[in-house]
Structure formats: C-alpha cells, structure tokens
Image 1 (cartoon, rainbow, N blue to C red):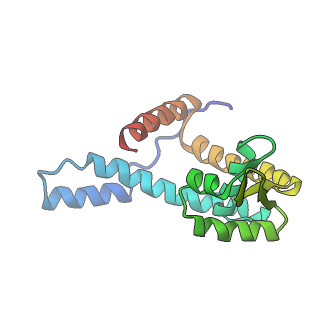
Image 2 (cartoon, helix red, strand yellow):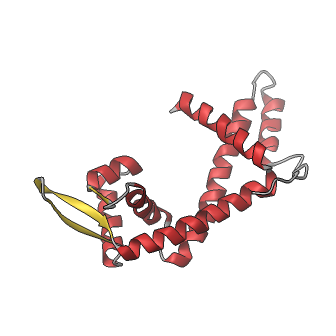
Image 3 (cartoon, rainbow, N blue to C red):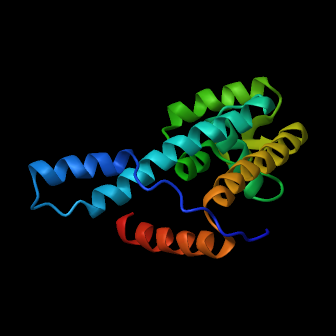
Length: 172
C-alpha cells in the first residue's frame, strides 16, 4: 500500500456540534468519550452501509456474508455446527436458521447430519459458496482500504488499529 500524506480533513463535524451543545448546557462535563464513541458509532454505521453495497453484487447481505466468511475462515473442510456459527457471530440459533435456509437454497452451503451427534447438524460451505465469499471478501477489503487511504497513511492506519484494539480489550 502506498503511503500518502492525507489532507487535513474536516475541521468540524456533527459530533463536534453535539459536544459543543453539551459544553453550553453542561460545561462541567468532559465530552471526549462522547466524541470518541460517537465517531466510532458513526463510522461503523457508514462502513456497514458501504460493506452492504460491496456484497450486494454477489447476491448476499452482510449477515449472510458473515456466515460464509466464518465457514471459510474455519479452514478445510469449511464445516461447523449451527451452534458454533451462532456463537461466533453472536446471533441466536433462530436467526442463524433463517440465514442458513437462504444460503442453502442459493447453493452456497449444505446441511448434513452430524456423524458424532444424532440430533446435530453440520454446515458445510459449498464450492460455489467458497468462490463467492472469496470474491466478496476481496471487494469488501477494497472498500475498507479505500476508506482508510482517503484519510490516513499506512502508519496512521496501523496506529489506529492498535489504539482500537487496546480500547476494545478493556471494554469487551
């Protein structure tokens, strides 16, 4: 990735307007946490929309992409139980069932009996699903890279990743 010196960026944003309002009515408050987390929230929301647009040409929504990507990351044979998928993606088994139904109907994965548990199932990524997720993840990463490169150089992006990792480790 080529590094570049980004422009100064906006001097004021919507989060500044909110913290300025609080400063008027409650000058005793330290609004730096509000500024940090407000921007994280807004960034996550904006990037979520951009990621959805990146996955749409592949015929999958973000939640469906997450299922396919989790299976792909699990390594060969790209198989997990619905419970393992639910735990990894932090969604209910009911929510997982709907996603699996749509993805199986599209031929992107299959469900089969678990040979070690009569009541269990195994979910396996199909070859078509593997090809699709490989293309979709590349498009998603390109979208994320474009967002980073529009504002940060490579060193700043690494620094931000480290700071966010540290913050997440203390809040999760």
